[in-house]
Image (cartoon, rainbow, N blue to C red; front, side, top):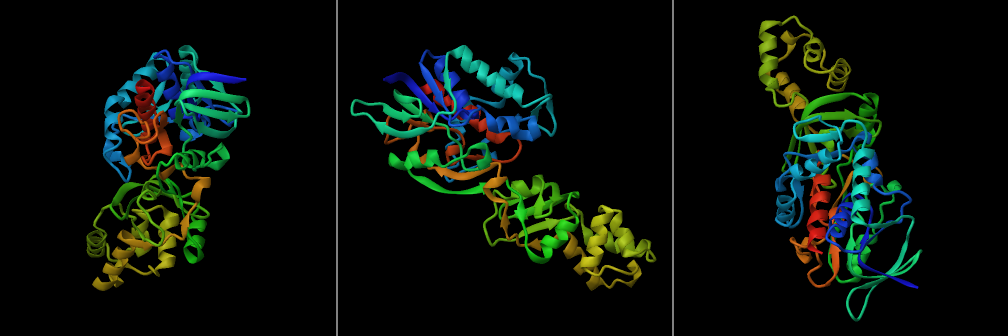
Length: 394
């Protein structure tokens, strides 16, 4: 027996839940499908279990895409303040950790439960642990899905299946395969918001400092971020590295200023003049964690007193400290990447309705699209905005 629905939304994550509720509130009979046994898995694990659910300062400039103008319309139509109003209406307590970055005060489960409640109130039919064998266009319009729970037909299908990041949470390339099946272009994808890995000497060095976090200024390409770096057993992580990974390409250097913008050469010459008998390592410890200062002294033979330093040595030391060039061997990949760069080509999707331009009734929202937000709540805001825009347009 074939079930009939107005709309099928594939993927019960942030964008899918938001879209399903928005569409159902407009009177549509919406079926939300997911192959996982639990909805909103990525929401539940995000932000260390407290979900950085939006960023009040989010603008189109915080997103990466081969078509950067695509995201503007949806982000303007559904703002962080709009989502915050929904959060407050459900009585969820939240905190602002960094400027604009809002987290649940208690648990990310609050956001997941809020979205599931909205879907329930709107009349969405949620089917979990449901796999899809095929999606076929019907001659008379609409689509027929063969699933593990039987055949389902609908006038429209919304693909909200996300990207490839964190496969242990159920991420697959299903959305990309479906786009290609219906002739929608998919741009190359790569892991982003992901730690860097190193090999050889630098892996050994960073491993020895594992767990140490230091405020730095880090650069790569057109990206420059003044935030902490975290040393790990495999390389470098922390906010500055995760953000920088959205700019990095294999084989490129990253540049780290361990003094975060301070004029190291001037500081060093001033200290040499004022406290010539001071040990160089002691001076270094006034600016950096002791473990890191000792490591620098070992790596670059920074022994002796300040008075013993020539101008040339001062310049060389300042370069090590303010412009350290490092070549990562790679990243930790999909296993720990928070998001996917690339995806469904937005030039082939309407920025107003999110319908595929050349495939009526087929829609793409959220991370499956070639729209990626920077670290700090922007990706969730894109999920809410694209979900609502599509849901209201259906």
